[in-house]
Length: 299
Image 1 (cartoon, rainbow, N blue to C red):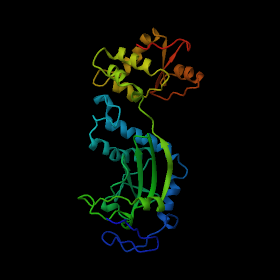
Image 2 (cartoon, one colour):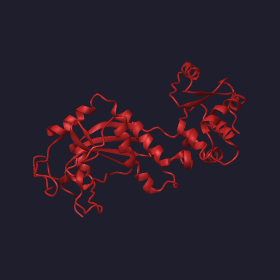
Image 3 (cartoon, helix red, strand yellow):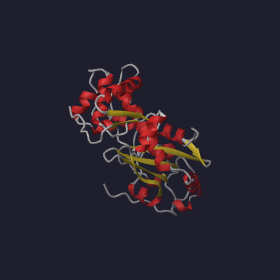
């Protein structure tokens, strides 16, 4: 198959099926695209997307019920992995306070916009989004990072194949590189702390026995100095009763090992963390050693 040759801005788009005849425009000449871009201009788009993606991944993993903590694990079905994009749409709407509105996913600055994401290398653009504005997010799980573009997905700039049964087509790489606008550059995606554990350590922390308190102390010992979000506590206590209460109960047992458990829900803990140049948000935990010179128990 020969290389796809794209039509250039200034030419007529080949899409005569779902929209009126129109010219291909460069981003700077597309008034709707520029209005949407300006709407995002005063917002911390990268950090907000980081939060939305992390929430979408946590939702799909459902660690509090399944004990899963790694989206790339064989325990995660490829279909579940792909569903991160669907969940991300709703997280983006919520975090940016955008309406769910037809004919696409939302309205931004009065213009219809579709929200797309992939954990691969391309996006499936549905027929109704051909020649419309799309936010295309790429999530690279292997590198723990993500980025997003704003692009008008002209049918002339989509791969020519028949696509999926519902008419979805991929965006040509050249079109993305030449005629899209980055919403933000690469942003780091927070790593679930449980991924820092060795396979043997993870097996112990997520085992059925011993009880939650002992396994939580074990986790805090293995991950001393690492900030632990609330969803990690729920994952360790998956299927058990009240993991957050067990985390609070773990403080006394951890203290016997010379570890102090701090939680962002408590003012005293936040103050102690701040004294160590650590910022704890609500729901976050960290284990710190009372005597920094005392080595951690490696058992």
